[in-house]
Image (cartoon, rainbow, N blue to C red; front, side, top):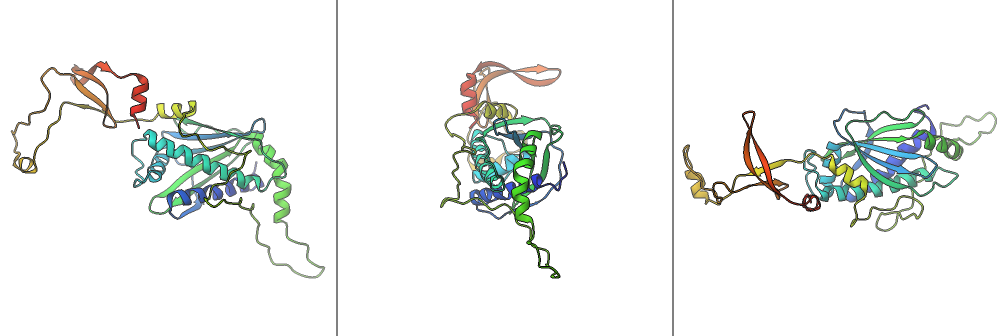
Length: 306
């Protein structure tokens, strides 16, 4: 399928609609710009199914998604930040709204409605091979004081065929210039884009048959699958103490700092400054390691990540 088809133009319109959501949520200028597919060791995928009609997938790098979610929760947009559950909730809610608006943009050019879709999240070690016969568009959200956030959109073969069948006639008619009287030359008419979906006062569009916003209290299997593959820094704390600024200034080579832990006590193993286990020091091939002697339940460990 050609990159100049109406299907890819609809996908471009979809991201323009999603940019409106990002602009509102971040309160920053957001523009849609051309982009190239870049290599990444971790790709987040957002799959939106339309029953038997097909599936729309969005792929973003883990680094971009982490930085974007850090902006969403009021951070500086650190692309190397730890992706906590707070980040994940903000990212899921934002992308649910963005995909809802994207589908509204696509639907504005259709002569047949799309069935209700379900949003599923996943993670890939790298960008997977895209299904032959589908339609793909790679663009980026250029976010003020953050940079580019690249999004690869892919309509699988079934969805692309559906859009080709139902969207092209209506969309093509909107682009066709009016016939000129004989002998009269008509200047190139501007190309019409799919009309933007109507916005409510709070800039959130509510359509019963499109994407439903993510439910904050629950966690889908896709959420947990994505969370399971996110790398987290693991630290082992030998002990801790408090000292005055004067004492810190007076430290010299050879100074001894007493820690509030007895020799032989188990060491704290932490993730995100939360204790998830305790253990004892061992030596493995001339490198230090730690053998776990106490550990929290898996449920408590996951809850502690936020």
